[in-house]
Amino acid sequence: MKIIVTDTYEEMSKKAAEIIANKIIENNKCTLGLATGSTPIGTYKNLIKMYEDSKISFKDVTTINLDEYKGLSADHHESYRYFMNDNLFDHVDIKKENTYVLNGLACDDEKECKRFDEIINNHKPMALQLLGIGENGHIGFNEPADFFPFGTHLVKLSDSTMAVNKRFFKEEEMPKYAYTMGIGSIMMADTVLLIANGPKKAKTMRDSFQGKVTPHVPASILQMHKDAIIIGDKEAMKLLDL
Ligand code: F6R
Image 1 (tube, rainbow, N blue to C red):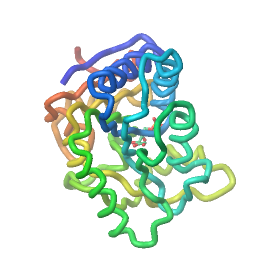
Image 2 (image 1 turned 180 degrees about the horizontal axis):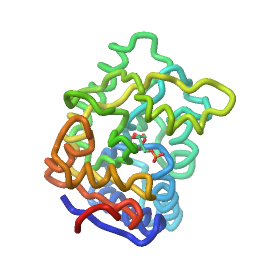
Image 3 (image 1 turned 30 degrees about the vertical axis):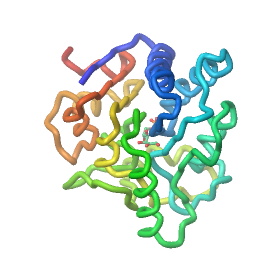
Image 4 (image 1 turned 45 degrees about the vertical axis):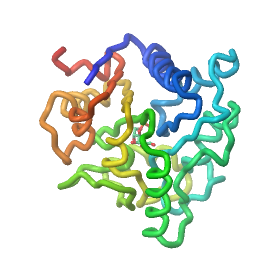
């Protein structure tokens, strides 16, 4: 596990984007696992700038996203498909048909999860999986549990995730369920890159990367990955003993 501490969010975002860009430069047909949330927005801005400066092209890149709220359509402003279009895909030369996000409106949960696992299987290994981290240590929407789920599944969001994410849902009710890629699929990526910023993430960063490996802190499994890169700003990393 490689741990990098940066002074600022901007520096964290730039470093993360450079690592992702290098994967594209190494293999322009690579598959990238992507995340949503507030943390990767700066990383995506840097990637867009690199594309505009002709340093990288997404023309032959495939992307697979971690998760999606159940019940939200692709054009709902809080859906993760909408987020990805808005924060990355609409600004680079990626082919939309090569971008995979779970279908929040799927009628049959089992079928949707199976469909997504097949997509993951057809593209494995992913060159890199980008991750944020929840305040409770979740990665994707793999919430603290008694075991590490392997494949794509439907989750009931934990009370703490509901409390943290409800800020995005103003007048309407926040979905209580989401589909998420499993921990097994995340661990199969050649490289996992986790980014975190701000003091609210400090405790979970210590528990995840200097505590014991346990499904009660899902991100702790990354300690077992052969190429995990953890980048945090100094606020998020302040409780780690480095
Ligand atoms: C999003 C995702 C989540 C977020 C996490 C942190 O696709 O998988 O695990 O990475 O909830 O969210 P932010 O970045 O908003 O703090």
